[in-house]
Image 1 (cartoon, rainbow, N blue to C red):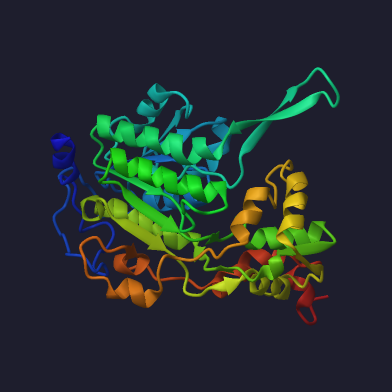
Image 2: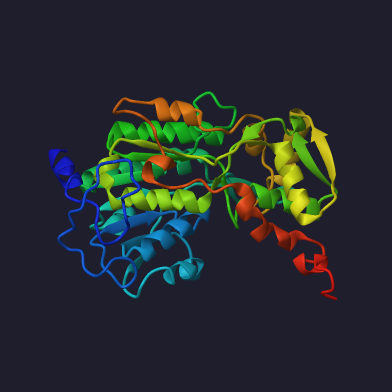
Amino acid sequence: MLATRQLATRHVAAQGRRSLSTLQLPRITERRATEAGPGGRASDAGLKVAVFGASGFLGRYVCSELGTNGVLAYLANRGDDFEMRHIKTMFDLGRSRFVFYSPREKDSMREVIADADIVVNMIGKYYESKTPYQTKSFPYVGYKTNYSFEDANVTIPQTLAELCLEMQVDNFIHVSCAAADPDSPSEWARTKFEGEEAIKAIYPWATIVRPTQLFGPEDKILNNIAMMAARYPFVPLIDGGHALTQPVYVCNVAETIARICDSPAEFEGKRVDCFGPNDYSHQELVDFVMDITGQEPRIWDVPKDLALQMANVMQYQRNPPLTPDLVQLQSRDYLPAMTAEEYAKQNSKDAILTMANLGVKQTPIEKIAFNYLHRYRAGGHFDQITGYH
């Protein structure tokens, strides 16, 4: 364990790669001994990062940040080679290594980590993946859980923490969520909390990143609203849509993770909360999306009990827009732990950090959403340009 801590102080931020002058932490100007090049593209950052969950929504943006900074990435691949081909272009030739693995095989996870300096875990899904199997009686098809919330949010992160300790990895960055709560009615949120606690018990130097709901081109928050308006005769609002959420731009969270990788020793054992500049009710988000897309669906105020019945049917779709667990999650506020003023007043060494502490500016949802929501307009955005036809 002592050897692990000695290794953890070996890496310092590189002067030539990403400017850390905006950090509200001590500026470190010493370069890594193995660093080469001017910084950024066509450079060697002298840093090896193993990434789990690289093909997910957040993962692809983190890979883009790492590739831009000359990081050598070891990318865990659980599926077909073509599933991650879009990530190859994010790195210079020879700066990425794709390794096939199974979350249930520890040795294959060791192969992914190899001699990495940092491990980043972004594995997770908002629904439990299921697989069909044949039954002897009608309807002759059943469904069984492939990876449960417990598997994705507790068992796999716990295994990674054990491997990081065993293999003397400098730092472990684990992406959790702002909704993590042992008392949440959502099993997903409860297991997210349990995963954090399991990691800290094994590897207390881990950096925990807690974002609120992510928005961006492939998000499941704004796209789901527009998609439901296009496919269904109504858009449901659970209990009137009064619950609040404070979405954060996915690129801001990716940049935050990349900056932690720049100077991992500064963030050992820290928690970094990521959230947007404003909070909204689900009713406000629906109105916002409809204003952009021009859709005119019926907005239906659905009691939670009825929403759960609907979700029990919809959960069997591929990438379901609504599941029973999502109903539980959307019926509660999904906000950061404190207000901006409370974060700023913290003085202790155990203070919870935010994106502002790393020099990352919050991007408002209004600045980004039109770029990917206008495709839901009936005639596209050209239809509203006077004289175009």
